[in-house]
Image (tube, rainbow, N blue to C red; front, side, top):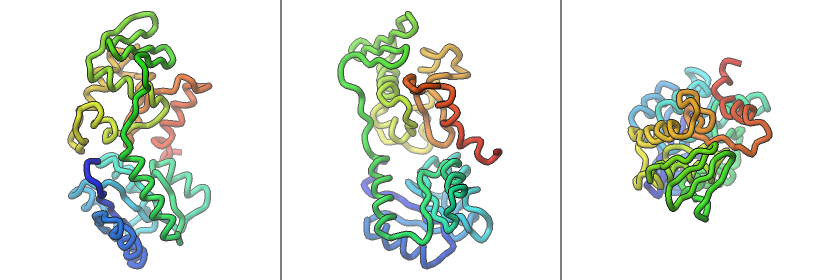
Length: 253
């Protein structure tokens, strides 16, 4: 995110809750938008690029969870669910669908202030790359100085941008990295919702390292979130992949 303060959308039909959240966010200097229904939320999502959505479940025109997929597909911003429905099944459903956090009402104002602050700070944290010339992970060994990749006994020469992206993936294997964090260190600019440079670069890198680029086993697309380089140190890589894809199947289970 290129700005110091964030744009945060509150989706809640309760005026008291909206007022409290508006006060908390306003004190921190954030730009705040409000929606009382799913219809209003969809309009707000179409008109503005939000950095965070605070989403109530019990909306007058439906369950707020139905908005999560819409938000992820159109904007990809983090979502915190706020709800009186707080049992384990409800929480796991919200988190499984892609919410970054699930907070049960009534909530403490100081707690939600800290949670929002920490979430936004983590989203701005620059991605680090392992020090040293060589980065090794699983069957991959990347020499950063020469941009040479040794994989499965063959040497692959990478472009500067391909090498930078792979270095980040190898350093952060097992982490889901969204485009807003990948774009600055790779492209030298902030990410916008129309920016597909990372997607193009990922497609190129898959052709370099994947046995079947159309069915990647290493650079995994996590729909609505970004990309994850498979953690080769996991005991069972297939189980790790299933966990990454679990949110996609939550509605159908």
